Length: 456
Ligand code: ARG
Image (tube, rainbow, N blue to C red; front, side, top):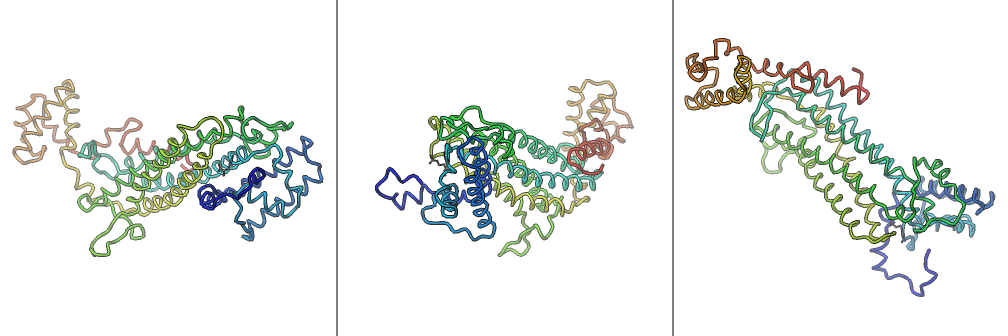
C-alpha cells in the first residue's frame, strides 16, 4: 500500500512487529461500514461518479459477505485490516477500487473504526452490567430481614441486613454504568475527514458523513483527531473501576464463604475443588474477579504511559491502543456472567450470620440509649466503653451485667436498658433513607428498580 518509495520489501521481523492484522481484524465490519459511508460522501463531493461509487460499494458488500461466510482469505502482505479490505476490494472491482482512499488516511480511518467498535462494546457491556444489577436486586429482596454483622476495619461494627450489604454493590455498578455512558459521549466523535493530520482538501460534508455512521459529533481539529486516544484511556478507566468493584465484591464473598465465617455457600456450579485436599471448596470465580482487576488496571496504566511522551500527530505507538481495550472488554465480558451466576445461586446461611452477631455490636445503640436520656454523645461513648471493658474482664456479655453495674457507671441507666439488647430493633432504628432498616432498604430497592427497568 505504501511501497512506491522503497526498493526493498520490509524485513520479516519488522513485519511481525509492525503488522496489526492479527488483532485489528475484529474491526472489519466497522472498517467496511466506514468505507461505504466514505464512498457516498466523496461521491457527493464529485470525486467519484455514481457508476464508480456503486462499483466500489458493491465490491465492499462482497468483501463483507466473504467475512460473514468465512471465505475471506488474508494475504501475506496484508498489514492491517484496512489494507486487507482495500487490497481485496481492488482484486474484486479492479483499479476503480483504488479511488476509495482518496483524501483519506489510515490515521483518520483507524480512529473512526476504533471509535465505532468501542461505542458498540460499551452498549454490550452495559447490558451485562444491568443484568448483574437485576440479580443483586433479586437476591437482596430475599434477604431484607436477614441480619449479618457489618464491618469497619474488617472488625465487627454494627448489625446490618444482607440486602443492604448486597445493594451497596448495586450502586457501585450504577455509577459505573453512568460513567460509561458519559465516556461514550467522547467516544461518539467522528475523526473521518481529518486526513493524515492536516484535514481534507475535498468538499466533504463531514456532518452528513457522521450522520450516516451514527456519530453524534465531528472532530473540530484534524491534528487532535488522528492522535487523540483519550477515549481509550477513559474507557479503560471505566473498565478498571468496574473491575475494582467486582474485585471488592469478590473479596467479601471469599471471606464470607470461608468456613471461619460460614455466612454464604457458593453453588457447586460456581465452586472449585482441590486436586489434593478432598474437603476444599474454593471461590475461584471471585478470586479471578479480584485477579482480573489487576489486569484491567495494567491496561489503563499501559495506555497512559504510551500516550504521555508522544509528539503531536499520529505515531505508531498508538497502535498499542487496541489490544489493551479489546482485552479489557473481553475480560469483563467473560467475568460478568460468572459473577452474576455466583450472586444468583448464592446460599445465604441465615443462622450462621445471626450467630455471628455479638452483643458488642450494640454498643453504639447503648450509647444512643444514654443520648435519649440526655447525655451528650461523647460522654455516652465513654460510659459504654467502660461497660464493654467491665464485661470483657468478667467474660460476660453486656446484657449479663447487673443493674447495679450499669448504675455504677451512669445513674441514667434504668431497667429498660435490657430492652435495647435487640439486634432487629437496632437495625430497624436505622430507618432514614439510605439506612439498613428493612423499610429503608425497601425504599432503596424501589428506587433501584426504577433505574434498571424492573417491575416495582
Ligand atoms: N494499524 C495502524 C494502527 O492501528 C493503522 C494506522 C496506520 N497509520 C500509519 N500512518 N502507519 O494504528
